[in-house]
Length: 326
Image (tube, rainbow, N blue to C red; front, side, top):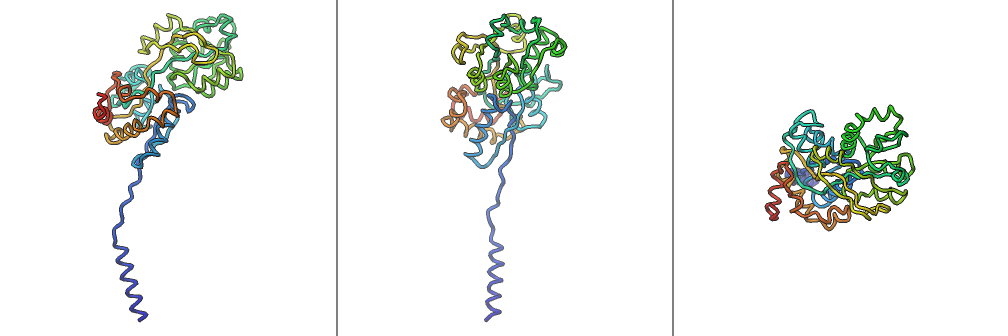
């Protein structure tokens, strides 16, 4: 009897072992390169990644710091799967034009998210003393404390173009005793609030959270942009923009500047299903995303599908055609 029971147990055990169980497929992991974590790209990337990870199980996303200038080469070279950058940067990167040393023709647009504007924060005491433009900063006989932004970002790229155009480069200013802080949006905001610097810049959507906090902690305004500088930046395919008066505390007047179209991109090697799924989840949960950033209040499929001179990824085309945006 005892041996019979053992035999039955062995047979049952073998039978159970042979029963097939559903194969588990781990979700594919992707990285999304943003800008500084406290800036527009950082907030958009965090919100989108968290939403994707919460609403579907096939793909998982994580964000990594980067910059609008650096991200095209990073994604194009395989250092990240997705990235945020700007239309003019992607067009330059695809052709290997300045500031890129190599062409990345496989870059593909997924969606436009916002239109950026180059914010030029400055203390009112410095502005009222006559330092109203970058031209005045360069011409100042007294060394100034300024923040050109974090290197590798679109913000710092614009600053570098201006300083090179007016003064020949950052080193010329440092040789004259200027203090230059190359920090991201959050670090620059804190630095101007604590009076470590008196001016900093950030190419971002309107409004920018770090900028709002800076205006609340110190008496600030925005610099003007000279026709000389504006004309030079337009040649680099930046486009005119305006920061409406009253958007930030103490900045009552409209300020004219330049900016670009902020977009999410990848390469043509990314699967159609991945991009299609990303957009379907994102646009299907815009109400949730509106709590992440004001950008999403105007983020419609039609706006996202704008033709900006960068080829659209097939997965994005499939989605936009499905919802009637193309």
